[in-house]
Image 1 (spheres, helix red, strand yellow):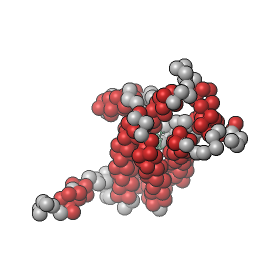
Image 2: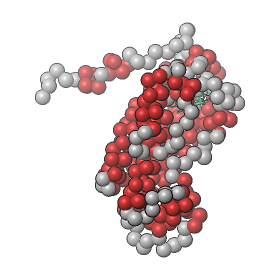
Image 3: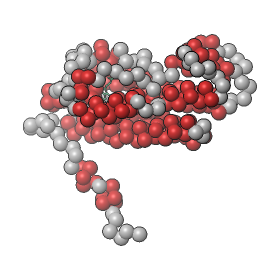
Image 4: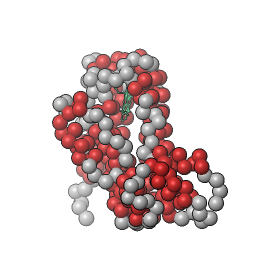
Length: 256
Ligand code: HEM
C-alpha cells in the first residue's frame, strides 16, 4: 500500500486541469466546452488505438473470443463519442464564432490519433504531405502506423489461414469467403467476427455522418479552419468503409 496515494495524485488531476488553455481574449464562454470535448476525444482515441492493437495481435494468434470482447468495447466507445457531439451542439454558431477565427489554421483534420485509427482499422494511406512540414513528428507517427499490421490485414490473414483465400486475395475472393462463412447453419466464430467487424465499420461511418451534420449546423457551407471546403469535403468521406466486402456480400445473402 502507498499511504501517500490519493485520487488527485494517482489520476494527476491537477496536471489534467492545467491543460485547458482558451485562446480568446476576452474569453469566449464556450471555448472551454470546445477544448474539453476535443481533449476527451483524444483520450478515447488513445484507448481505441491501444485496444485495436490488442485485437490485431489476438486475431493473429487466432484467439478470437477475447478479441470479440475488445471489439465490442471499441464499438461502444465510438457510440459514446457520437453522443458527446450532442453536448457540443448546445453551443450556438454565434457563440462558436466568438473564438473560431483564433483556431486557424488548426483543425480536427490534423488529429494524428484519428489518422492512426483510420490506418489501424485498415484504411488506405492518404496524402498527409501538407502537414509534414508543419508537424514532422506527426507525419512520422502516421507513416510508421501505415507500415504495421491492421485490423483488415489481420482479418485477411485469418481467412487465408483457414483456407478461404488463395494468395492472390482480390476483393472478389474475400466477398466469396464472407458468403461461405455466413452459409452455415450454426453461427461459428468467423461469422461472429464478421458481425463485430461490420459493427465497428458502421460506428465509424455513423461518427463521420454525425460530425458532418454538426459541422453544417455550426458553420453552414463555410470553409474549414484546416483549409478544406468544410462540409463539401467531409461529405466525400461518408462512404468510406474498412470492410467493403462485408457490406457487398449482403446483397447476395440468402439463407443457409
Ligand atoms: C464546432 C465543432 C466542430 C467543427 C465546426 C468542425 C469542423 C470540421 C471541418 C470543417 C473539418 C474539415 C477539415 C477542415 O478543417 O478544413 C473537420 C475535420 C475533422 N474534425 Fe471536426 N469539427 C468540429 C468538432 C470536432 C470534434 C469534437 C472532433 C473530435 C476529435 C473533430 C474531429 C475531426 C476530424 C478527425 C476531422 C478529419 C475528418 C476527415 O478528414 O475525415 N471535429 N472538422
